[in-house]
Amino acid sequence: MEKYRRTEVETEFDPSEIDLNVLNKKVNELYITNQGKIKNYVNYGLNYLKDHSNEEPLIITGKGNAINKAVSVAEIIKRKVIEDLKRHDLIQENDIEIIKSKDTWTPIEDKLDKIVVTKNLPGIIIKLSFPKEESQETQQ
Image 1 (spheres, rainbow, N blue to C red):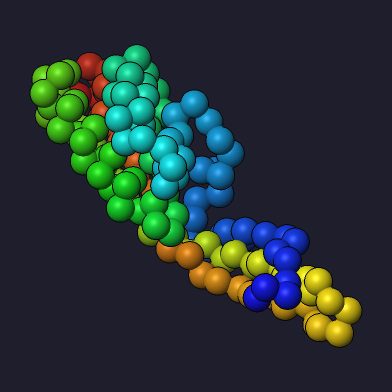
Image 2 (cartoon, one colour):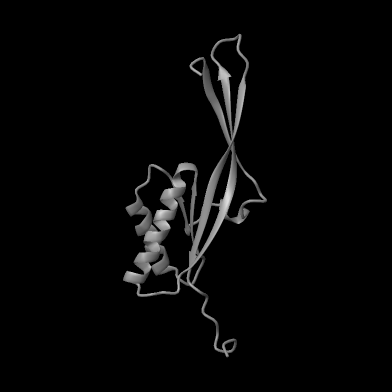
């Protein structure tokens, strides 16, 4: 591959595998990467759950090699919610996804052809939320 240069990386989500509303980056979303520190992710997630407990759920996403770190972040946040906030009612939902990634390699020399490599990357979406408080009329 030393005679090629990667010119284009295209990532495509399979709509049958993922909730497309999650793709828009929001305040309640943590996108986990290999370079980020777990401590920073945990602090952000815990502060979000403290401040916005009755709003949208905290969404933790990771793909490829960052799946392990995303699961670790979710588990640490769950443990800290019990220890710090003294709440035992945190709800967790997990979704597994497939992300198609297409890399285009163009040759440096004129005699070679362009190469397109398609990969399927695993991904995970973890949603952490507290139950919605129901009004007294609906509780019986």
